[in-house]
Image (tube, one colour):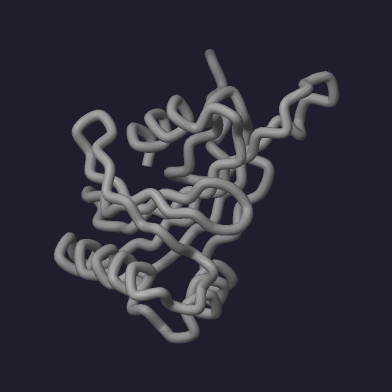
Length: 153
């Protein structure tokens, strides 16, 4: 008989780009962080913040990191609306420190890429379940990490 260990965090991929989960914030703590960043309650049903790194391996020389913010919504329409509101706010020069939003196509997905502190940032709506994904990627080669994240999130 084979024992199958339960996943530590249900629905969260254990690896991304050879990195493993370094930290997870979920539930009310994640919701509080998301709402604090926006300065208002943006109407999410739930949220998760997942950081991936090579910190598990003391011999790995890469400082690559990916932080994934998952904002689950009650509908695809709300995920699309929130994505549009973020794009518009950043385009209009909001006070967030993010700038220069560009809509790009990656493997058939429309993604918004923006400049800002802490790495290269991307966000996009996703379905099943409906959600908005925000990625912060710190790497010299973001493309394969973005492509994998699009498939996993």
